[in-house]
Image 1 (cartoon, rainbow, N blue to C red):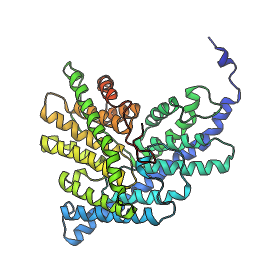
Image 2: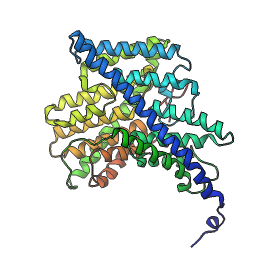
Image 3: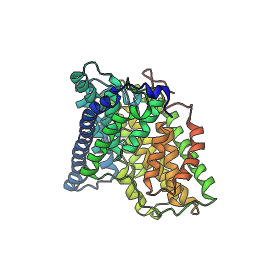
Image 4: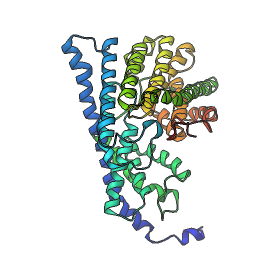
Length: 428
């Protein structure tokens, strides 16, 4: 049956969607190429800092002295960039989330440079926030010049979708994030009535971004854990408890966030703040070990390669140190995202749960801990569910994950965000 609203849909709708497809493709591919370029440069610099230089100097690359020196130097250099480079590397990263309004395009070089330095220097942050912000700024700047009357939300949605698709290697993640965003009314394209109309062009961008990344760099979030054969009755309460524990760990970080931000702001100058942050990160690395450095994806693969190698106490320590490092890095002024390092922290927490209760399958423990932690840190339910689900390939864990998400969401919804207002108070 055709409804009255459907029968009165404007005939220009399909033509508008087709007209948007070409810029969506271009933005998706460009978003992926920028991400790949930043990561390639960062990997080259990382190899220099953590392999070539310590080898030349005859210093252990994971020695306490070297980790402290590199992270302190990284903080100093990033602080100088924030202080001196035009645009000051964008807004205070503690006040921004994954998808924000376009920043000034003049700030993009500083944002990308500080992101490269942080990724290479071992800072516990990922590339997602700086790359998304940069792509949004560039897409908005380009779009308003080629189509001056076009809405800002259009270019924001295309760039965000293209970047998220590139980051995760699939357009599904972008669709889930934008569905939440559209439901809140934050991003909406004028003239588009249905949800699928709203998502059409962003999905083109997300598809182009993800395909480009898959073809050029073959990203993977999957970890090497024993396959999960199917749910048992005992797995249901275990999944709910572990997801809730992940959410509680994440909420501890959320509540510490404004206090850490306030403490670093006492130093007043960006060079002093970020250098001090580098020192603290170096000390945390000395406490938690080298696996708690960097954005966490490669380290997560190493952690799960042989889970039995790590004691329960060491796994708990790594989870706590990684979460603390994310809080410190995000509040002292380093530019980076909190999703990827939180996945590592959740993985360590899940392996800890498996270590103390071996009857709980490692796959169940890991994905549920990641789910709960990401829900607290990102407050994106669909993205958290998706990220946890792709860690262990297959669909057998999905029903369990959905059930585990319910108590975790009850613990985080309506609570403060891991994001601050401009005045330094916690956002909700």
